[in-house]
Image (cartoon, rainbow, N blue to C red; front, side, top):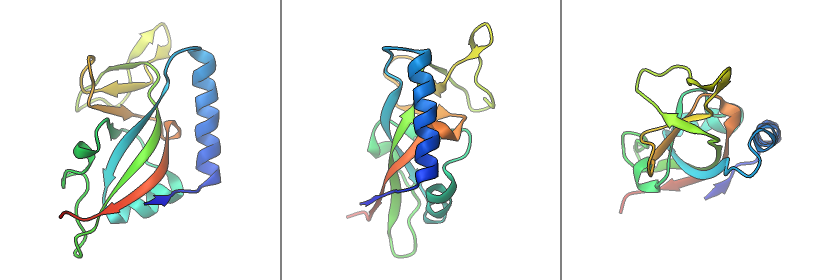
Length: 140
């Protein structure tokens, strides 16, 4: 387990969190979620963050699936435990490119696979996530 230290990404995340906390006082805007990824993508994520339209799983077992966390030749696999600003969520779809309006000109903050007890969240603004820890593991 490695702690990710990137001051620029952290500052961007903290600024976005302050904005959401001011916009939605008393709302649970932040969640700790999982993101499975390839080894090659870890270099990019550690430096510049995730990008747009990125999934985060509620349970690590989802992020550990080989579809999301493909093994290197030596069998090592990778996933992140992340701080994610989910704010107010709506049910998403595979072809969603932009979040819909919640009301007037205010958009939802994230999408989920289902409204009740979601198993994943999708964000479209990479300042809404911070890769707190990178976990390297192998199947037993």
